[in-house]
Image 1 (cartoon, helix red, strand yellow):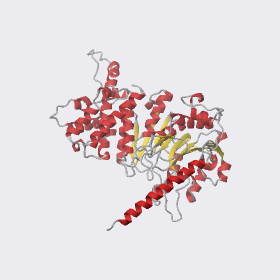
Image 2 (cartoon, helix red, strand yellow):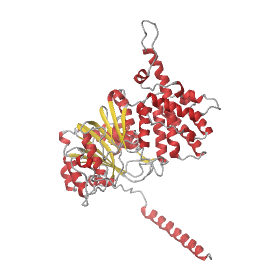
Image 3 (cartoon, rainbow, N blue to C red):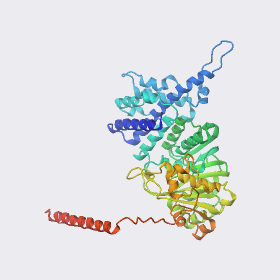
Image 4 (spheres, helix red, strand yellow):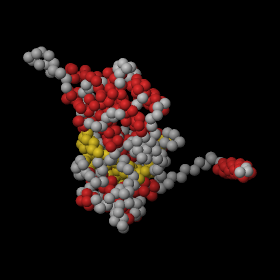
Length: 532
C-alpha cells in the first residue's frame, strides 16, 4: 500500500466513523476510546493472521507424536503480534448474527485480551453497551472493508495516530483539549534532532505515547532494526485516560514498554536518574499549585539546582522542574529534546539562576523558536529545547540558536506545520553544528533537491543566517543576561520587495477603512432610530 493509499484510507475511515458519531448523541470525548478500541481489535487480528503463517513454520515437531505442538502466546510475541482467543477476533464480531448482543460480545473480546496480557488489564474500553446497537454494528463494518482487512505493516499504527490527531483537533478528552497528542511536526523535529537509535528512551509526561511511536519509526527507517531489540521505552503519565491511550498505542505498534500512571512532580517511578540515553517530552506548560513543601521535592535527586522558589517560598510554575528532570535523567552521553513555553527562555528570578546553571554545564545544545498555531487547540508559540551531555569539547561553550518562527507551512487558517523540506533543512543545520562539519547534508535528500536549504544556504555550507540561525557563545549569552531566546541572537531579516507599490496599497487601505467607517456610522444611526 503506497503512502497516498494509506492517507486516503485514513481519511475515508475517519470520515465514515465521524459521520456515524455526528448522527448519534455521543460527544467526541465519549466516542474516542471505544472507537480506538475497535481500531486495536481490527489491527490485532490483521497482525495475528500475518504472524500465524510464520509461527506455523517455526513450530517444532514432537518426535514421539510426529505432530507440531500448539502455538502459544510466546510464539506470537516473537512475531510482534498478540495471541487472540477465537472470541476476541474481529472476524468473529463482524460475523455475529443480527440478534446477537454486539456490545456484550465486544466487551467480552476486550476482557479476553486483558486476561492474556496483564499489562493491558483495565486499559481497554469495555463500555460498548452505552452505544446504540445500530451505531455499533455500522462501526464494526467500517473497519471490516477489504482494504482494511488486507492492510499490512504499520498501516493501523498510522490510522491510530491519525485518529488521535483528529480527536485532538476536536478537543476530545482533555481540559484544554488535545493535551494527549503532540503535533507530528514537533515530535519529528525532536526525534530528528536527538536521533534516538539505542538504549533507554524516557518520556516523563508521555500523553498518548507519540514520542515512542515516532522513535520506533526512526529506528526502523534509519537503523533497519527491530524496535524492541534496539530501544527500551519508559513513560510516566498523570492522567488515567492518557495512560490508557499510551498503552493502547504501544500495543498497536508492537512496542514493548513500561507506562506508569503517576505524578512526575512527586515521584520518580522508573528510577532512571542518570540512566537514560534519550529523553523527549511535551510537558504541560506553566503548571501552578505545585506543593513546594512536599518532602519528595526537598530530597529529589533530579533537582540539583533546587526548586524555583519565589520570595514567598512557593513555586510559581513547573517549567524549571521539568527542565531539571530532563537533564538529570540523561547518562554521560544522553540527549534530550522537549517542548517548552516561550516564557521560559527569558524567565527571571529563581528560574533565571537555574537557567544560568544549566547553561554553565555546557549541555544546552540548541533552542528552536516555533511559530503560533502548531498545536491544534491553542495558538500560543513555544520553544523546543535540546540538551546533549555528549557534546564535542569544542561545542561545550556554544549553543545553536534557530528562530523558526517564519519557517512553517500553512495547513489551514488555524494550523501550521513544517513541510518535509523545512524539517529536513532544520535537521541539516543541527547536524552541521553537532558534527562541526560546514557542509549541509539532509537525512533523505541532497542539498540540490531541497529548495528551502538552497534558499537559505546557497553555498551549501552552514553559516549564521540573519533572522534564522546563529551559533552563540556562552560569552554572548552572558551578555544577553542568560536569555535563551533565539531572536535576541539571530536578529531580524528584513526583506523589502522593491517592486511593490506601497503608496498605492496604503491609499487603497485608507479608502477601504473610510468606507467601513461610513457603513458603521449608518448602521449606528439606524439602531439609534429604533424606538423601544
